[in-house]
Amino acid sequence: MGGRARLTAGSLLMACTGVLVGCASDADLARPERRLFALGSASYADVVARFGPPQRTAEVFRNGARIQVVWYSHAGSPSEASRQGDVPIRVLECDFANGVLVGRVFASSFKSDSTDFDASLAPAIRKGATSSDEVEILVGRPSAFFVAPLVEAPAAAAVGYFAVPVDQGTGSGGWTFRKSLTISFDSKDLAYSVKVHAP
Image (tube, rainbow, N blue to C red):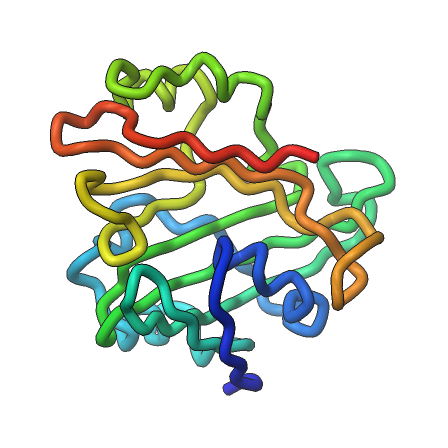
């Protein structure tokens, strides 16, 4: 298992940009089907059985809960990148509370399964009015999913969109995330909060 670190605030993926450079392996990392690992019931053992031991781990605190974070990643050749000049990489993050999966993020800059998205669409998501189905129609298929304790009440669940760290530049590892969009939903499946990071 990879090195451990204690992290605190911020998006779990964005807090750990520095670890991803060292994570890339030769093992292919396919986008998991949404139904493959059910949040709130899938276990750490389920994920390890599917993907093997994680390449990196960390421990964070979110909303008063201790979260174990594990990462898998895979880098490819420049010809496989979705945009010319990018470094193609796939990243899978899985977040656990007491051994139970409560968050999952997949991000890719491969042209075959890129998770890039249009952040300019975020203002069209209306709090208390836009449903999760409408978000998906507007922005596309989410690549990240979260439940409590990563989501605070009254929100019941959240989805996200992440563009992976394909730009060389700032950050402790020499990389920076391009952008992210996270939307939480209340018990009526209506948008409760919208958080966008698009420098």
